Every structure is written in C-alpha cells, then in structure tokens.
Amino acid sequence: MTHFYQKNELAFSLAWIGLYVILFSVADQISADLGTVKIVTAPLCLAMTAFLAVWIGRNGLAEKYGLGKVKIDYGKYLYFLPLVVIASTNLWRGAALRMSVLETILYVVSMLCVGFLEEVIFRGFLFKAMCRQDVKRAILISSITFGIGHIVNLLNGAEVFSTLLQICYASAVGFLFTIIFYRSKSLIPCILTHSAVNSLSAFGVSRGKASDMIVAVVLTVVSLAYAVWIEKAN
Image (tube, rainbow, N blue to C red; front, side):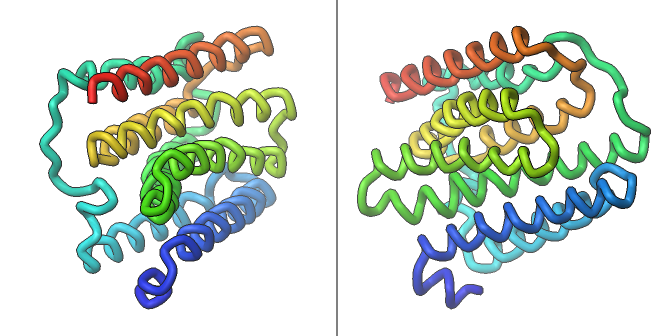
C-alpha cells in the first residue's frame, strides 16, 4: 500500500474512494438483509478507520493530512462557530430515538467513523494529490466529487429528490471543508463537524420536502459565505 501511495498519490486516492463507496454500499445492503441497521457497516467502519489512522501515523503523514498539531488564529475563523450551525442541522426539527438502542449505537459509531474516513479520503488524499498542479482545480474537484459521491445513497433506498438536494449542499459543505483544510492546515474541525452531522442524523425528526429545501439552502448559503469569509481573512 505504501509503495502504491509513493508511486502515484492521485491513483491511490481514487482507489480509496472506489473502495470506500463499494465496501460501504455492500455492507449497508448486507446489514439491511440481516435486519439490523449498520450491523456489518459499523465493524467495517471501525476497521477502516483504525487501519488508515495507523497507516498515516506510521508513515509520518499526520501533519500532511491535517491530523497533527497546528497553530490556528481562531479569530480568523470566527472561532469555527458557523460549523456549529452546520453540525446541528439534523436537530432543527427536534430529536427522537428512531431506531432500537443497538441500531442507534451501531449507526452513531458508523457515522463518527465516516466523518473521519471521508475527510481523510476526499480532503486529505484527493485534494493533496491534486493541489500540487492546480490548487483551484483541486478545490473544485474535491468538493464536487464529495457531493456527487452521495448519489450512492440511491442504491440504499434513498429518495431521488432528497438525494439530489444532498448532492447540492454536500458540494457546498465540501467546498467549505476544503477551504478550511487548505487555509488552516488542519482537518480536525472538518472531521468533527462532519462526524456530528452524520451521527446526529440518527436522532433527527423526519422532514418534508419543503423543510428539506430550506435546510439545503441554509447549508449552502452558510457554507459558501463562511468559505468566502475565510478566504478574505487569509
């Protein structure tokens, strides 16, 4: 794996994106067939998270991928308060226990790991591999790829309308996260926010199409406006 990485970082990142999408789709489907949400996905998430964390550490790549200690001027980033707004999205209409206790635990564990995995793969591997040639193109492709990646939810039974909305605002959030990583050199704020958004969806009350659209617009506006602020502050 290390040899593959050293030989071609871009191919390495694309391979991880493909592996991630395929394995998680299959794991979710098997979990559904077994009748327990995330029963297969959660162990897979934990295994992949542990594997990547150890591999990054052993190869001295923590600083490169924003997982090391970084000095941040928090004032320039509004103390990351806009990220709190984004993280709380799934609780705007209230909270409820929508699954069994076991399924809720498995879901939260999976989503916490997904926050780490997707940030490392899309913001870390892919963005870093591309930014050597053209930073602007790397930011754009990393953001759009992250958004389009959510189309896989259709394979797991998600509605077309909600999935299309998710692709739109996920691209905006992906753009923001890429800007944060690029400017602050830290991936930690992105991982924490991403993990919070995902895991709190286990407790979110179902919304109608109108509410989904409002949330999508708010997320898109907040993400883009915050990204512009960060760019001007830096």
